[in-house]
Structure formats: structure tokens, C-alpha cells
Length: 317
Ligand code: AN0
Ligand code: CP
Image 1 (spheres, rainbow, N blue to C red):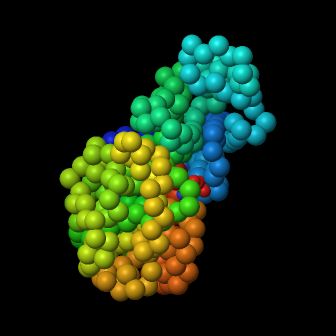
Image 2: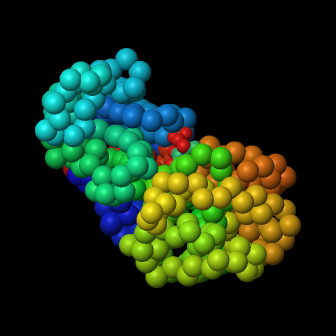
């Protein structure tokens, strides 16, 4: 595997999940594979899970790991070509990327959407430049439009917990005080659309996701109706995608918070969220603390999705 930025890059999903479950059953079966190999993780944004789980995954494979927080101690980077660099940015990405590539074998990049310029975000300008100019395999640790390591972990988790061959999985928008990217819901849709699950998306009017991510999924504007008979509730906030409101918070409608009353409408569904989650905005304390909440095993599977992807990249070096 030379790059991992979207669902397509994983190939047949059942094989990928099987490989992931094999990795999980014996995390230290490939400690020689990464010997004297170096992973460089580059963060343009904050992280708890991605940072720790990806580092752990690489260590399980015997790799050395370096982490760069671009906004803490590195030079401020210009990302656009042609700019007269007379401002506060001391270095251009076009030099920084090949330099970083020269110190490592594999690169992971986290670079969120700016939520100001839809075209710039949806062209994935930052991670695409890493792919082009680093000379190394590159994987996304959440880019502008997708978070594939999260979605792969989500798929593994659903496969582990499902009790029906074709579960009903509901992605629900929920309120949040700040504007968040569409990367997690976009990516979740992309991965759910690989499967034959009964996949339903629910959100208030105005929060429609990009059609290329919604694909053939059902969109239901009545959240309570969407919850009926669900086996998995996947909550997430996102900002508006549609023009002229791209990147905006249209409402923080608290009637969309996932609570015990709504969970009653489901078929005893499991509750999922990628974390970090704002309690009593996205989900009530009792739902996230309930025995049906699987947010912790879901987060634990981030180590497994990362290890599977890095393993495939090491095998292709
Ligand atoms: C980020 C987002 O919504 O994309 C990261 C989630 C994994 N969340 C926040 O910034 C709170
Ligand atoms: N779910 C996730 O990616 O979490 P972090 O932002 O903490 O890495």
C-alpha cells in the first residue's frame, strides 16, 4: 500500500477486516517487519487518540517513531505556491515535505479542513502535496475531507459487535458549539457504503453532506424515525457543507442530542462516537455511560486500524 487517504485504498473490505482481526489477535507477530524503519507523524492539529494509537501501532511493528507538531516549535509553513513570503511563515511546504521525507520511511499526516474555502478543502491540497513531494508512502490521520483510520476502526468495531448479518447503522448529526469539519461523517459514509448494511443518515435541514459521500445512503430528516429499529447509533457533529453556508454552524439544536428516550426507539442499539465528545451536547451522560456504549472499544480499535495500514505499507516498501 503506497497511500491511505480514502476507503478505496483499503481494497476489499472483508479481507481488510479479517487482516485487522488477525493483527488484533497477535499484535506482536510482525515486530521484525518495522526494524530500522521510521514513521514520521506530522500534526497540523491537536490529537489524543490518533497520536497515541498510531504511535503504539508502529511500535508493535518494531518501528521507530518521530512526531512533529507543526504548530509547536516548527517553522510556520506556507502551503500555497506563488505567495510572496513576507509574512509570518518562514518556510514553504515544498521544501519542508521532501526534507521530512528524507528522514523517514512512512509519513502520517493530520491536516484538518480550514472550513473557509470549500474548493481548497475538498481538493485536499495539504495531504496531496505530501503524497506528491515526500517520496514516501503517506497515510491520513484525518485530512480535510476524510478520516479513514477512524472509519476503518469503526467498521472493525461494527463487525465485532453486530448480531445480525445486515445491521441497521444510523449516522446522526448532533449539536456542538463550534464549527467542525465534515471529515468524520464523510468518511463514515464512504466506508458504510462499501458494505451491505442498512445505512441511514439523519440531520437537520441545511446539514446535507457532499453527494459523493452520501452515495446511495438513505437520508431521513426525522431523527426519531431514523432511530427506529437501529442496531448502531453513530453520533457526530459537522458544520454545513452546502453553499453559501460552508463551514458554518447553522443551529445548535439541542433537540438533536442523543438521549435515553431516543435510544429507546432503537433495537437496543450500540452507541458509537469517534471521540472527543462533548457530553450533554452530542450525547447525554447516561447514554455514553450505558452498557450499550462502545466508544472505548471503538477507540481501542484505532490501534488496530493503524497497525493494519502501517503493516501493509511496510510490506510494500
Ligand atoms: C475533530 C473533528 O470533528 O474532525 C476530530 C475528531 C476526530 N473534532 C474536534 O475538533 C472536536
Ligand atoms: N478520534 C480521533 O481521531 O481522536 P483524536 O482527535 O484525539 O486523535
